[in-house]
Length: 382
Image (cartoon, rainbow, N blue to C red; front, side, top):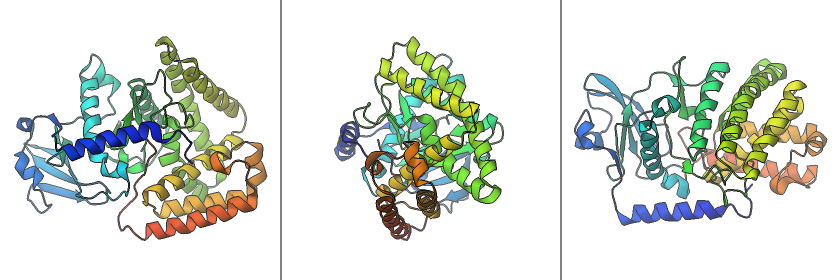
């Protein structure tokens, strides 16, 4: 689902990051002196050391260790020699994360930064060449319940990141932790810089892919899969109610984002995009929201299927999303057309053509799934 201008910012960033890796230069955040253990020990960690409490092997770009040192627990991320996401973004994700950790440390050091970025994990130390990243351990687990509190904290943090010129593409379940009080973001391998006053996001030339925005990223990489689970276990009415709640939380925060962009003299096109989103959401909240539910779930499942196929990182959920798309094409094709929900190469194609195409995609997802024994991953657009 890539537009003609897709590669411009992406290719430039990838070229710069590959050149940096090839050049052999070090990139550090923090100092080795602040580590609770010698960096040589951290670099050589295997997982059987007495100070290692847990090992998490599911990540496609790094292994994660829960370690205990200096009287507290820490998260140690150790880059894999070869990332499990088979594209340039996967290969450069550890470098990108360290670059973003530096940005986020700077933002948190500004006046009011700790409060504005309360949902961002701190960084104790990171080293590209050593392949390690150390942070305070975050209590909690992957967010499982999306209520007003957790949605509000997530969207507030995404708005602050957006205004700071940082666009997070991979809001998948494994990248968001919640202890029941505070939701935290801690993985930034697919967070990229952009200019919020002149660009929609970091894809294409910054203006060529307006469909991508923070709430869309959450829906595509996380929430619509959660809704699919709810739809299959509790029924369509429960899923629609949860969808309405999410939009009700997102709407005022997007109105605030739009006002902040206007105050900073953002280009009219940037403001118009958020005006259009707010108008659409507002209308759905006044009605039954069923049409918006169908359109936005279609978009999110199409995009996530495309992302997983591009990164060859398909999971059982990828297959369930593909099944939802095929069922929706069979049962609601005319509604999708009436809603103008079909986009990219799908627009204007017949029902038979789309069914044949998505059946091929599902078979591809089955093949790529068999290549991995671990959990999910993401190949993200920019």
